[in-house]
Image 1 (cartoon, rainbow, N blue to C red):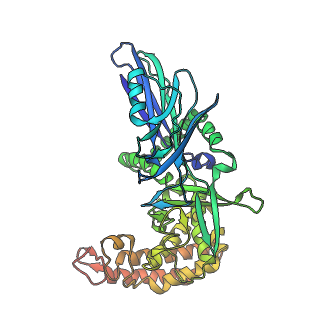
Image 2: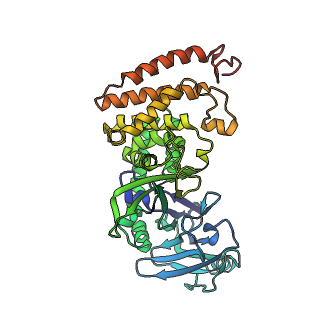
Image 3: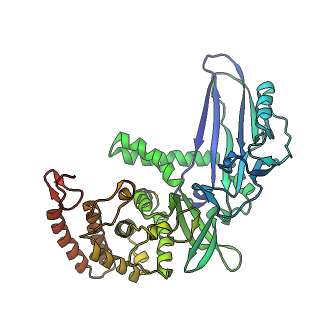
Length: 456
C-alpha cells in the first residue's frame, strides 16, 4: 500500500478569514500498489505536548460530537493570557477535529491504550477519558480512526483532520500607555471555534484548490527568474504566511472593530523591522495591504511613545504575543538599520499601491526619521546590523551606510509622490553615494568598513 500524508497550510492572501484561521489540514490517502485488495484503517492522535514544553503541567480536555463535527478540545488547566516560554505560546485551546462519516471512530485516553487498541481492532471505542492529569501522566491523547474498507488500485478520497491551537485574545498591544487585547480576524465571522472549525473542514476542497492556484501563480512568476528559485519561493511562502496574525480590536460596544485592523509578525520578538523588511517583497506581490497593516502597529507605537528617540525602534517587544513596545532593542538599538528598513519598505509599498497615505498621515514622524538618516548615514560609527548583532560589527559598516543612503533617496521619492520637494534629501543621498564609493573602495572591490582594505 502507498499511504500519502499531506500537511496543508492554505494560503489565500485575498481572504483575511481563511488567512487568520489558526488551523491546518492533515489529509491522508491510500492506494494499492500491487493490484491486490487490502483492508485499510487510518489513525491519528495529538497529545498535550502541543500545549507546553513543560510536560509536567496539568491539563483538561473534552470531546463533543454532533452530526456535523467531532471535536477534541484540550488545554492547560492553569493559563495566563499572553504567556510564552522560549518563544512558545502557552495559553489557548488545542483542537483535533473531523467531520463524522461512516467508519470514523474517536477516543481520548492514554497513548499506549489508544494506539494498542487501534492496532488490535482497527478502530476506537467512541469514549472519553475523564481523569484529568498532567501532560506526561499516562500521556493523555485525543485520537481519531477511519476505516477505509477494501482498497484496490484506485486512490481513496482524502481523510481530512483539522489540527490547531486557538487563542483569544491573541495579541496584547500597548501604545501610548493604552493596552488592547486583540482578537484574530476570523472571530468577526465565527463566534465560536467549533463553528470556525466546521467551516474549515467543509472548506477543504475550495481551500486546496485556492492553495494550488496560489502555488501555481507564484511558481510561474518565480520561474521567470529560476526554476530552483521557484521551488524555494513556494516553500518560503508558507513560512512567511504562518508567522503573521491578522487582528482586530474590540470597540466600546463590545464588538470586534473591523475598522481597526493590525497585522503582527512573530518569530524572534514582535514585528521586528528586519523581518518585515525581508518579507516585504512577498507581501507586495501577494497583497500589499497586509504589509501596510503590518507597519501600522510600529508606526502607531512611535507616534504615541513618550520616548522620542528620533529613529525607528527595532521591534514592538521581545516576547510574542506581547506587543508592549521595544524591550532589549532600546538598550542595544539597530537605529540606522531599522530606520532604513522602515523607509525603504514604505517607499516600496507606496510604489506598489500608489497610495502614500501612510506617510501623509504620519508626515512629522517620517520627516524625523529622514533627518536622522541625513545626520547618521554616511558615518554609521559603531551602529550594528542584524548580522552584526550575531557576529560582531565593524566600525563604519559600509553595507549599513549604503542602506541608509538608499533609504534617504527613498524618502525623497516618497515626497515626490506626495507632490512635495524632496530635492534636499535626494541631493544629500547623491552626495553621500559619491563619498561612500570613495571611502568604501578597497583592492578587491568594497571593504566591509571604511579604511579596512583587507576586508570585503
